Image (cartoon, rainbow, N blue to C red; front, side, top):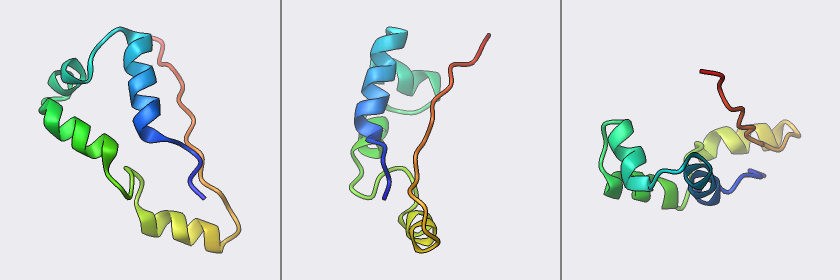
Length: 70
């Protein structure tokens, strides 16, 4: 099982940092529509096969976000 909700996580992190998804897209050299499409993708950002392999090995997948010290 993949335990993260990427869509919610990205939105929350944008709010915490004080930027919009459009501004995030600009920072990574992309478009807001592409960022939105990736965030809302049915299979998610993490590869489905990767999750299935770890599940078969008896693991759940969790992503941890750690704020960088700039």
